[in-house]
Image 1: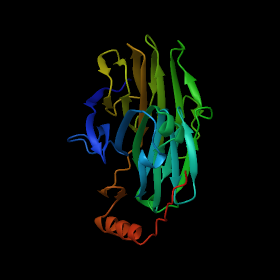
Image 2: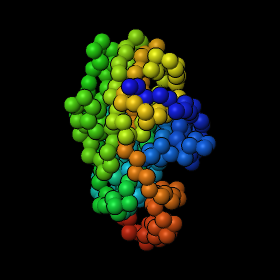
Image 3: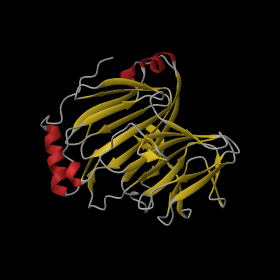
Length: 289
């Protein structure tokens, strides 16, 4: 049985510290789709003649969740207070479990800053269960070449399996919750039924193009389709060439208290996170370019 559509959310423009991007989650009355807390889509053209430290997001802290970045165009340079320093290109993923606390920066690569170029990413936040919120932070970079893929029977849809298991293909990212995270490249006319565990919450976000979902609903660029938990699959058909992601995960069903870059369970834990960051307990990041 195919899942029915619960809601179609159209991303809205937000200003994040001078960066204008599209936010699909949270949205009005939809605070989260457990365990997914936030979805940001940033698309921009850089015109060159700049330094890396003038672009992107400089050093900032996180605790209690996993920020994930899918790179679609350009490169993202990640640095953090645990000593990780890596550049991931288009088609790759940066998966960082912030755990007990980490300071990191996310900037377009040096070549884009200096010479210009197209830049496009999606960042989403995955909540961590209470038992994992104070884990040691980890960073997992994944290149396009190392990401397993699946093709539809008509060879017009390619799914990159970043995390979780799809039709016997297992993603290489280790998450601390049960997650299925997919990247989709859909050609016009491509059609496929995608299985999703029935107890997982699920959504599909489109970067562009146009889709028909379950042979009934037509969705477009920057639409986020949230599905009911009443079936074991969704069906997609490309009405145009389309890029999309599917995020699906087992709900954590725990109380959440959040403040900016900290996502915990209790308000007292938020106060502790602020104190620990101010005391330098999440480390210090001095960027190197």
